Length: 166
Image 1 (cartoon, one colour):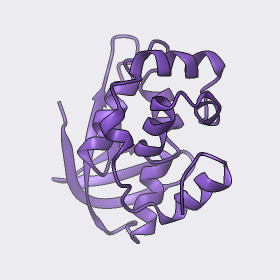
Image 2 (cartoon, one colour):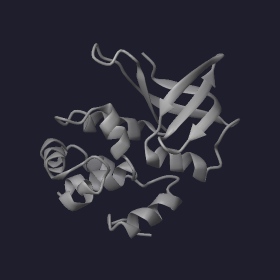
Image 3 (cartoon, helix red, strand yellow):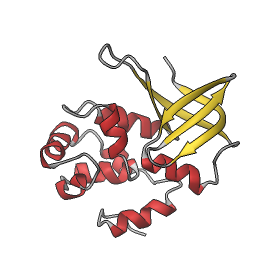
Image 4 (cartoon, helix red, strand yellow):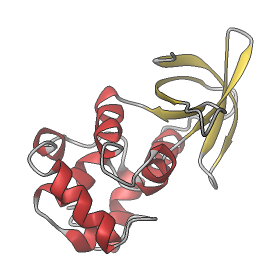
């Protein structure tokens, strides 16, 4: 199992959010939620830069190719692990949906803001309801976190009406 990776970024792409991180001579392809990609670019981290990422490692019999999802902070990874506990939301769908900081999404869950949750890619009405039903009351601490490295996407979140104060 892989918990975290420290190494040099070989490549970084926005669509889809992916990084290849070389650690110990091995290149690891890591999926990046949009807000993680934006956080890296906000900090001028790109090819050739050293990076440390928290890793969620996923492999199943149906999907034997391992999927690595990268995060900059353990709290982001912990929130992701809670999100994939919701019925019908697997790692790929959860990673694609995380386009805003986890505190913004957790706040929408705690306030039962279904409209904001439905603005996340791949999350419709039914999925938003399941997210709230499963996670409300469990992500309150995450909702209170101060977002780090999010100057670019807090503006986008406010433009989208997701309740982020600038």
